[in-house]
Image (cartoon, rainbow, N blue to C red):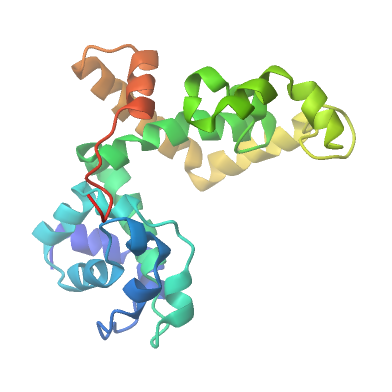
Amino acid sequence: MGKLYDKLMEDYRLKEGLNACINCGTCTAICPAAEFYKYDPRRIVDMVQSGDDSVIEELLKSETIWYCGECMSCVTRCPRKNAAGLIIMALRNLSIETGLFMESEKGRQMYILAKDLNHNVLNYGYCVYPRNFPYEGHPEAGPVWEWEHAHLDDVFERLGANLDGDGPGAMRKIPAENLEQLKRIYDITGATERLEKIKQAGLKKAAELGLTEEEYIQKLYTEGTKMHLNHC
């Protein structure tokens, strides 16, 4: 067995998610992502079971491992209780650890999640914070969102929410001590280190392309191929 395969098998998610797969294809049949993306969890499990380092490296560089939504529908139907979703998590983890995630378009988009989504979580306590979702950067949200974003306080008040307010209610302001606890969780679990690794890889790629960080982010948000979808 190769070095990449050995490192992959150290991940507890492989030990919990791969139990003598019989290659029946049930995971692919039930998978929502497989309906839209060029994604076949049965084939990925088969590739992992091969133990071939060159095959594992191919997966770590691929678009394929980023299609999974981690819904775990696979484990609910698998006759052996395998979890292709857990295997995908392990592959993603190793792809980032080795830096091979930068070889794929979907992998490079992890920079956006590392920067924007986690910025919202750590600073506001929410994955999506409405004031940081302007229409100008997300025209796909449509004209209704353009109006709503311009009238956020009024809209949230009418909905009975508590945007940035003290006390209970949807979208309330999260106390500083709770945000500090979130940050400590990130630090202790290695998430802070992981985010920094993704950030540095992204900045290096931006420099290679001659782009500023903001230009690189806009490129990730607005440019992409259609090769990922089943019907393309």
